[in-house]
Amino acid sequence: MRTEVVTDEEHTYINLMNIHTPFIEDLDTLSHLLDLKNVHRDHKRVEMGNDQWNLVFYFDQRTSLYSVVFLSDVEFDETDPVQTKLIGKGI
Image 1 (tube, helix red, strand yellow):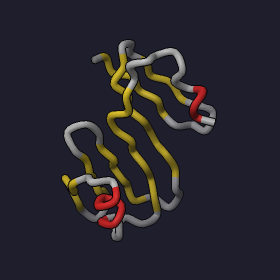
Image 2 (cartoon, rainbow, N blue to C red):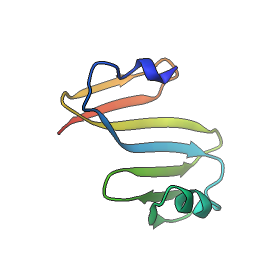
Image 3 (cartoon, rainbow, N blue to C red):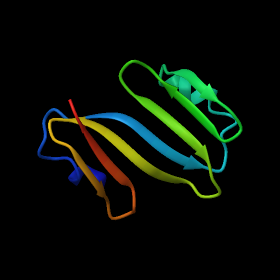
Image 4 (cartoon, helix red, strand yellow):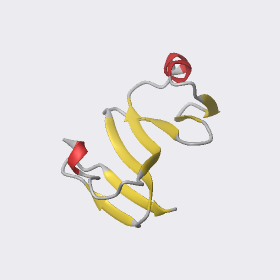
């Protein structure tokens, strides 16, 4: 479970999630539900976000959470047990 990954830092926020998925054509509903604006769209990538956080979807045959970028008090770069990259950038 991913909740065990960030337990020590009270001021850690998700800033960006990179997701691989076999479809990127119909993500407008998701951006509307999350109140995110489409920032970039082409045949390989859809990026949506606001001033606080972003989601980037990449076309891939497999669905996976590729990486999560956190704004944190400490910097880190690790890979979790399911091979998701966890990146902490200092705030």
